[in-house]
Image (tube, rainbow, N blue to C red; front, side, top):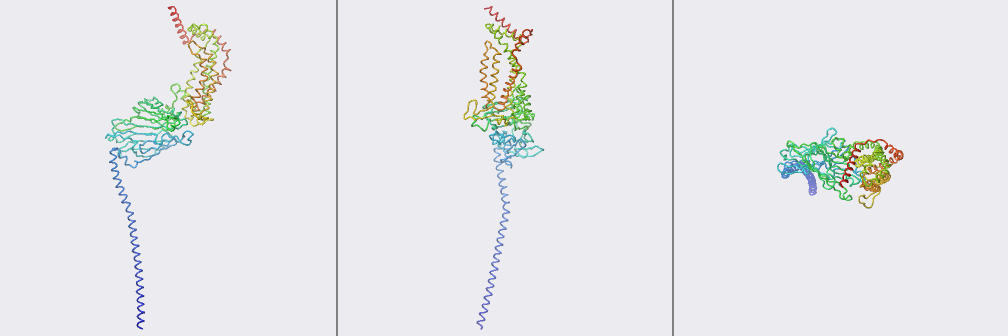
Length: 633
């Protein structure tokens, strides 16, 4: 019994020990897990703390490194930039841009150089081939603007390579951009741009502050302005013909550098410089005239099929003088159309860059053609406006045309008598001249009367050659088959190029040539009969016969690549002249009545005019001298 009891107690004991061991193992594992969790938590907390602390240390390290780098950088840059090394350490010392924009223009000004690197005209497109692409006066590095700074420590620095600090503000409807090239916190060179609404003109000031200890102010700073002008029209050759540098100098005088390769001028006291393209211009104006200047123009179109992007290379070099050891220049930029009325609206003589001709030709354009055509085009299409404009001009000139035809008719009636005098005094040219003048005086006919009206019409014809190529209103305005009245009206593209003529066929020049052919055909006979051949003078009849065919050919060659607006004007003008001539001949000029009037005039006493008296006296003196010489012989 004892043995069995022992065994039972033993079993119970082992059971209790086993339970205790299991419990201890469980508690131990739980404790281990807790310790692991606590350790893990502690590790996680330490990592998070480390992460929170690390950025601060990194930031401090970066700041410290940056300080070291800037110090080193400043020290390094000072070796090349001197005091202007300061500008290269500012946040603005990077490739960045500021945009000024209104309804007319969009200007992009770069931090590097502080100048306009893009000028887009928002209301105008390039030629129709690239419809939708706006006109760009400056874009893609085709321009540069630079001041060459000379420092007191004998450095030469170019502003186009240095960084300016931009500050943009707005006052009313004006955007004001200050671009500062800094040599210190309060030492800088400033470009200030002010763009108001609805303007192509931008205020532009150049001034310095506190740079008297930095810059060498004993001599002026060189301003360098370069521009490669983009092609904007259909015909690059035609556009290039009207692209040049124009400038105002010496209180209101105007001139241009000229076309061709490497043309150059050095005018003094220049108040503005215009890089003029055919219909658009970039102009720099100054209230303080540049004492001297060097203006250079170069033609970039060698082959119109290859050189299709740029037309001219323009360069300007002018001095900016210091005043009390500082720069202070009030200037303007103009980025806009070369439109006479637009330019004139700024009251700065900018309209003079539009080539309207000199003297009387310019007056006709300014006071007749521009106001009249502007009025007509304000309420009708441009093609119709040209036609009405031509009709009004020809009607206004019709009295002069009438006098010319009347004089020709009188001379034609007198021709038999003049021929008779010529035959009678064939061996005595002086006597023949005297008798002819007597006949003119008795008949009341002025042989110059036919020439004077024609001479009066020449200025109007020449003025039209200046007006239509400069008429901005015609640009990209179509009429009938012409899609652009400011360029040629191509109806057929030739597979080859004809020298002088081109590689296309324009229709308006053909019509104008046909009209001038019939006009000259109708008038050449009368003119030849009206003016009998004089001894020692060329045969006018033969010359007129040649001109009948030469003039239309010249019209075809000359006008084929010209603006179709001018060709349309000449076509209508010749048609109207033919019509006026037919009406005058049919209803106003009667050869029998003219003959009767001349015979009646012969019976009336005549008083000599001063001109006629002078001519008679000269002939008499010449005749007397001739007789004296004959007696001596």
